[in-house]
Length: 102
Image (cartoon, rainbow, N blue to C red; front, top):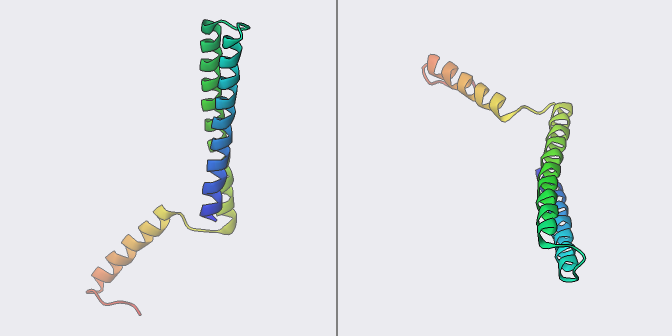
């Protein structure tokens, strides 16, 4: 499942980056054709970059929320919970003189 999530994240980020890159190329083409001046192009490209960064943050936030809900619905323990249980188990085993309860 984590491979699927990683692939989904990378695909979303890749599409955003590819779109921004393609638009940047088109804007540069318009500058060469004289339909847009360089300062306008730079402003548009900067705006696109900011917009792309915002989209990436929103995408990441949405994906993290979806993963959190999926993990909760599956009843899986979080890493921090498992680690806390390991510490408690180690303390109990130590209190029993190192003997395992098995």
